[in-house]
Length: 592
View 1: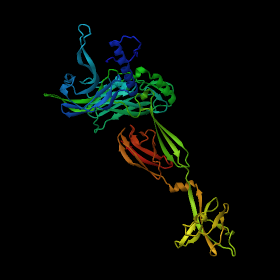
View 2 (view 1 turned 120 degrees about the vertical axis):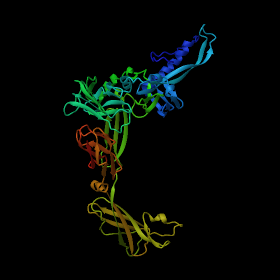
View 3 (view 1 turned 90 degrees about the vertical axis):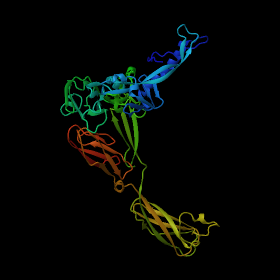
View 4 (view 1 turned 90 degrees about the horizontal axis):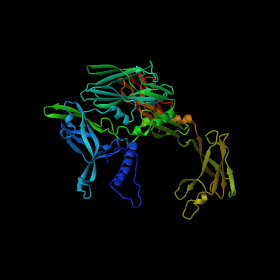
């Protein structure tokens, strides 16, 4: 099943009396295998699915973890158990003489097993095999990858090698389709040795579609001395001008590359073929990417291996030894979460979140789009159910009982103020009496007939109470209907009045929102990154909106990760509360 050609798809057509030969069974297998491999390649991509990490067990032995991968033809590669391999035992070790580094690669392989005698076969072909066992091949190579092919299969565009030596390799990639007025990322892949001095480079040239002060674009990077990675990607955020339907190159008149490695200085003028098209809006971008997203784009690099590790080599009289290991240097992994591969071809991921607003706030939606990753985040603000704040008042009113027969008589109080001012109020009444069973004062709320039962020894008075409220004057009158004789000359009535209020300013004063940002003051180098934290007090909505006050003061994402600009200076980072946009806090960064 080594046939790497997917097309055309042909399957057996069965009919009564059909003579089945070896060819028919091979067609049957090939049809199902190639269909599955094509889906693997187009839907999941290529790379490590799980495991397959590489470490140095000792100075001459590598340990490869068990795991699974998909190659660039969509074939599954299974390493069922952890492997320990001496460098001298690996295929390709003879090519490492005099080399500073090498790559441990993984590829699909298969072999025929279980030999048998084919009695009905033609002369000379009686020895055949019953099974084909799928497996893998581990090998070493000192040949660096074909970076353009490798990065293009990962979805990068406009890939070009800027600089290549034994100590350092710089590879540029630029999106080919941009949206006018939006931010995009230019990326530079850095590949170096463990003993390479700190890397410093700059790429500068004239540009017509990127926002800048002088009509030029300058990409500058200085590696910190603490940087231990041998392979990583540097991202340079840029913003496109508000132009539309413009075709241009990133550096139409060429650019100047400066590289510093310790005492070594390199300067060269390059003609970078990085063609870019500016679309007028997101929809135009999406349509253009769809037109460019053909099948051949997804089937690139069919012969590429999987680079499991980059090895730093040490040569001595005793042979070749491992000095350092960088596992999965080019991040060839299948994206099992988040954005699908090939977002540059028009695919993107949508994530959502919901935050709670106060009931008086209007619902809103905030959208954050990251062109570099094709990720769209929608943040929905939903008002909470309406809440009321109540003003309450309570008191008592003594009503004098009439003389004579009191059955079916009525008594009323004078007009009294309930204490809540003008407006509609809700009044609840209760009648005070003495519970003789417990020998204590009780309050009757509702109908006293409920308690007239042989199991109940208390005898509340048989009365009904009602209130007459005058909203304009803020007063009320209380009345009693006596259904039976009442002991004594007075009945005390308790009233409980409440008035709903929606005084937003008063409620806000009780729910003051405060916001603090840490760290408050920081010092950073040019293009360094810093994580800011925001603490919101006084609201269930803990979200904040980050921004940089100065136009050229760097960039900060919605999670508070800040990247300093190229120019030194003092810049203000502003956080605004999502619960109350009038509440904000600032932090200051000194870029040196």
